[in-house]
Length: 115
Image 1: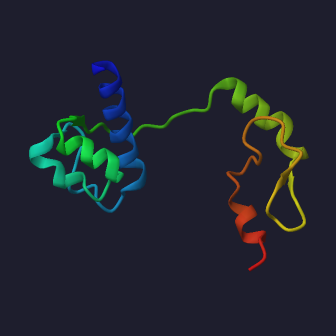
Image 2: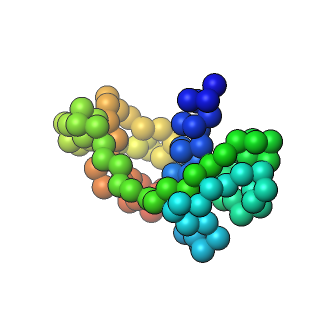
Image 3: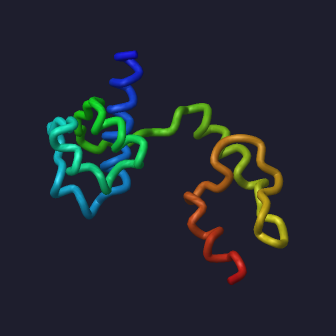
């Protein structure tokens, strides 16, 4: 239970820094979040995580770091992404085999969708 709690806390700390650029001034790497100062992360974490922190789960805030794709995933993306396309109604992905279905992070797909 302790190992899974520690892993969950580390994962939550990483999510905080990925999605909360505006609130970084409130928490910084090295901060320890407990029930006493849980309000610092209330707007940065999911309601379930906030509940767990208020009930005793501890979080240690870590610095953001780049996470590289696993080599097999990167190879599959390079190999299969050229055959993937959207359906005519832009609601389905066709020809997907493995990896990320578009190399450029899929930003362009959203712009091509009908409004």
